[in-house]
Image (cartoon, rainbow over all chains, first blue to last red; front, side, top):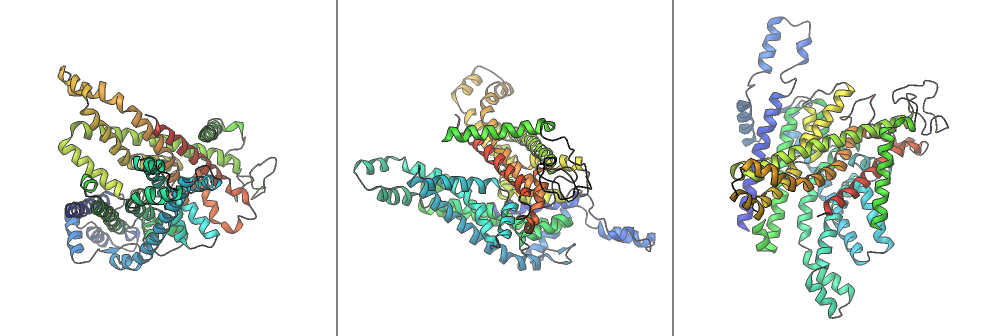
Length: 290
Length: 269
């Protein structure tokens, strides 16, 4: 388990550093880097304009910018947002709480709903309820998160329900597969042969052994919920990280995008590492294989 | 039940493809023709889905929008599958450092939410572009950013093939590495690539729709399913104009059908 944790932590550090480097390269190579609206000001003399351009293009080598960004990161200074004219650390701190709540609560509701629907589908595969579950999850899977957010607005519901609706079909799909495999295993066949009740077989021998798989779904749910939160927060006007990403994309605020890239890489890989550790703790053989 | 569902999925896709390939069968209007005397009209014989706030025929925009989105998704899926075949194939065949580097790259791409990646890279490119250029940009973005997950599957398949008995025998017979790869590995990876192509299609249609709703997809006046969904933002008017929901219904039907067919392709041995 410690090995899994150490591997996960090294992955977090290396991939987030890689994300930062790639983001920095993009910032430098992005069209319009160093350009300023002041360039078009006719009141400025050529000397002033040249001075502004010199300042804007200062540190234009990637490695220098990256080293500066890393130094700032160590001291908790992520730079400043050109479009919002505010320190990026403050922007992230103010908005992280809302997104974290939406992702955690919406993701948990989505996974729980997926789990319940998967059990219902397995318990009575030919019933109308299972058919409705399938149709509902197909519809949710086939709608863009932005449209789910619009439906949420229309119904005047909390946006975390939109996050839950985006996560639920993926959890249902995965858990249905896991539960079906569990139901087809030998020990379940033996339990049936011994004449155990259907409900007892379902909950004691099919559902309980795969409860640990919920950890794997939780890791997957974090990434899906984070992705869904961008259009949901943008459309529902929620001041979270998703809305910040959308605003930064529209305003070409590249420093904000670089820092959010690193933050999301850390959160997603962190969630996957926690999942790996939980699975390794429950089942050391499988954990080491992963 | 599965057969009925698959047949329905094929029917939806065939009808949509027919409408996209031969739009004149459904409408004689252009998607950009503005009829100033018919602004925001309700459905009628001349305009079966009414007109929008610029007097454009909604049906024409829907048909041409579906064509843009579906062709864009097909082209992007083809590009993503080609990149995945190249990256995953080379990584799985060569192994060692190349494989590790490829895995790190795919880890990075897979660990970041897909829509976030699209938005970030889109932000690096000009936002005020012509409609044609916006289609090309969206297609390239989807294709070039969607390779990571399929590449992992391809790498895994190539890795298992590289250690299989028939490849060992081919090598023992003195065939060169390139010949073994081209003649014996690639043909066996084809079913995996086909499955990845079909799996990517609904994902790319949805991604284009998300980008379109957020205003970062295909630019006006060219329609796409995503840009048509922007009308839903005026949700207060939905009860008086329910026909604006038709693009969302078409999108859901098409994506559900694509998922159903992708599931069947994946399930095939």
